Image (cartoon, rainbow, N blue to C red; front, top):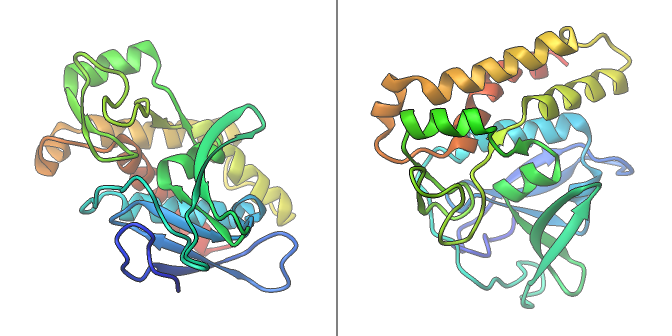
Length: 237
């Protein structure tokens, strides 16, 4: 696999399914840097199963040690400077770094989840509960601390505080079931409620929060909780 454009360590290769591909494709992942590398435009061609598999990986990898992100990156395929790019998927805005020779794109876990409509802003009630219970979190994009008492976005990279969107995950499950011509794993409303409850329980479990230390990545916590629920179902597909 290719070296990570941020830390230069070898990225972990994930073999995933993609629409229009004759064989599975490889995606590079760096957990400490929270980065994915997709050759060419493979990100938009991932099947629902592949997207959920990457979601589960984010839940396990993003909770580990974090390597700060640099500002500029070189393409691991051609060594050219990657261009920071703003893009739009349906009504969702997200960013990534693209190779000017179309060799691939580099995207953070946070922006990948945003591209797939897997994250959302917390409601006023959820944000108030976070401020009363957790107080400080780490930015899912750059790792900097966010003081929830005064901020609702990272003061370093301006990424907003976000939670995993259980509706987005439930929709991906429905699409996967439809694509496989098989029954859904559960009633859609029940599945969405189960996913949402799993995330809330993980975030607001004070004993777990104390064990993790002072800073908590809300996306990593939510992805880990929901990913655990998805594991058995995905393995049975």
